[in-house]
Image (cartoon, rainbow, N blue to C red; front, side, top):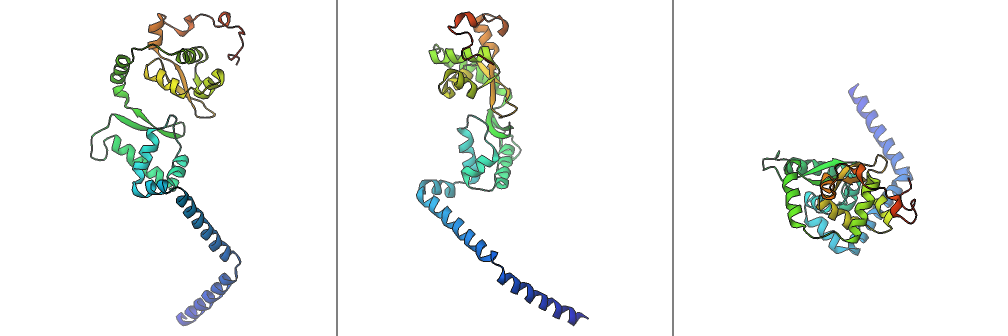
Length: 236
């Protein structure tokens, strides 16, 4: 019985092997793998500095560099594309970074943390240190706001909560640096995320109310009398 089973198994294996050799898809798969490898080699050859950065730095260092310059949360897929690694591997590396920053890997807890918000990841000051940072920023920023900053602040005050993209649409210019300045001054703050796009929404901070001498944003004067066209840029 055992012998017949072994013989049958060998015969079946030979049959499967013969069928596999006859399949037209096998050469196609090999060709696809070859083309993919060649494409990757060409891409790395076209940018040797990028290839060197990816090969000489650990994945966690690469992710830290990308997250450090992010103004918006970056999704795992975007990070994986940037570092040319599988998404699963990127997620594991991010989990390790979070544990490290939170002091769960044997080291001290850091003054910043890596949060997952709006489907992406971004560095934030640890919440318990917010008062320290706010006091420092206010002491280091005694200069007056630029005209661009004042205009952006007005748009946020009257249209909050509002995303940077919507602010840029109203002002017809890029507002990234201006928004960072206003956040740094403590005049505006993140108040949520757009449910459709995940973009950060901004609103005014109580610090602005103190500077204006009002207790509520509702006390701001009506905007319509100050505009040549009351509907321009402020229609819903």
